[in-house]
Image 1 (cartoon, rainbow, N blue to C red):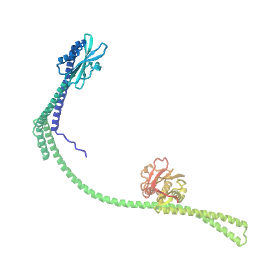
Image 2 (image 1 turned 90 degrees about the vertical axis):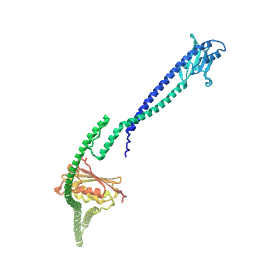
Image 3 (image 1 turned 180 degrees about the vertical axis):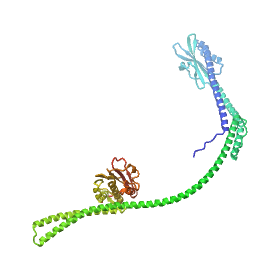
Image 4 (image 1 turned 120 degrees about the horizontal axis):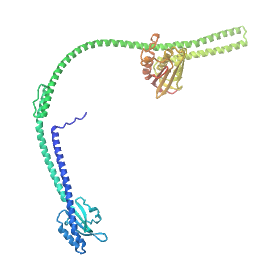
Length: 544
């Protein structure tokens, strides 16, 4: 939750503004005055120092010219007598020798509290202009006679008196600032009481109107022009509010009456809708039952197609076996008659043995083929009628499915290519898988290759990440664009009047998504034919 913004009162804003303005004004004035006093004090002391330096240098020249041994003492005494200003702390006098060297001559200290300082001979060039230190300034001037330089005079002046005056001035400024703040606070309080009293009265009147909701009440005139304009605007707003409230009440009553009428109509229509909805639910249940029956019928129809195909396939080898066995029986009767009549020849016996080997071989091959067909049909039929999981070889399952519908495949002149690892054993539900493959192949034969002389079906199977991937593809006529989006919906067919139920792909979709818990998608990028991608989870198993 966002933190509520704190509002500043008008009183606080007024007091702070006046006090801040007063403080800033006083501080700016005080800082300006102090800076000006400080600057003028430095200039005054520097000017006075320069004047004293010139005077003392002029009086010291005659002592530097003298070779008398007491000239140093006399100069020192004269300096004490001449210096009457309290700003000078130290005086050093240096003499310039004929060889150009500079030596200390004499000095002056203000009193015993100002001990002697080191000479400044090495700073003569640097101190030719005034240099400011923390509490004093220093200057060195030449002592000359005419054009001849006799020596140098070092002077140090104190800045303590100026600094003391500035401190006093600062204290006075702070005291004046406090006094100004107190006066500003008193003035702001007086201004607030004077200007806000009418505003407080106006706020109270508006609060009373808000509580009573009597918007016909008018506010009284105000003494200040701005507040009076605000009062007039509020009075206009109150009149308009009263008008809007009256209109709103009338509209509310009208809306309530209309709502009541609508509720009555809605109640009547709701009752009628409930009756219609009940009828629709009953009809929908019947449709679902009919759809389930049709799906079961479609399953049985596919099983019937397999039975017819297997019957046709089994009939051929059994017929050949019967024919071969009849020929063998006839040959055997001839040999027996010749043996009984004692007319049996070795060539006749040899020919009988040769023909018998051929007939027995024909009988064995055809009976073996019939047994294989019946065994495959039995496995497929059992798998289709059972949804139990078991371990099986995927390639073998596909071969059994193709064998059971081989008659349909051959009659349609369709070539089926299967790409599947030979040693791929999985644990899954073989029944739904062979039903899916049978429905897809029969769907291609009946629809994709309708009107074509031949066709090719390609089935690619692989295992990736515990998922069995089956890509089913044919190069037939493809799927019409109008039904691509609803290819897996029930009763979707292009041969509704030619025996097509429209449940084949719906059955495939239900087997993939419900029985195998997988996914099936139709690839739409194919230029010719159709392609389905089927994936569902499996468990890899060791080869049996």
